[in-house]
Image (tube, rainbow, N blue to C red; front, side, top):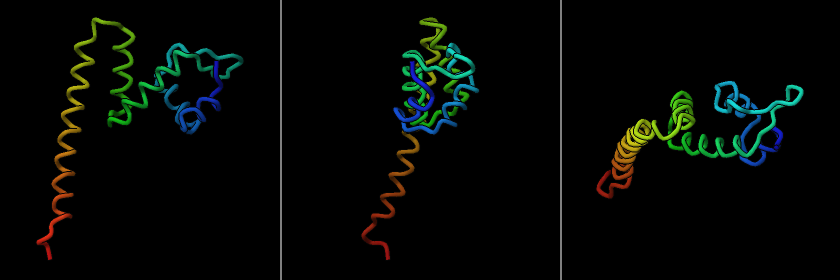
Length: 111
């Protein structure tokens, strides 16, 4: 079991972010001892997934939905895959947009 401070250091996240994630229901089975959050291996793994999804650009509501689907098990695999495919498409479009901008900035004939 880890304290919120230990997890904050492990993931280089502010304590306030971890409290926010908890408030948003991303750690539904977190234990509390005398009101103090105790992070188990389950929450640590969930946090790894959350941070990965967040880095992909997903919003908290979508991450919460993904986590809920994951908790439901294999029957939601297609929904989770569709969420990833949708996000992948959005990231690819953003990459193209940024590449066009970079190409314009690298233009040698521009003056």
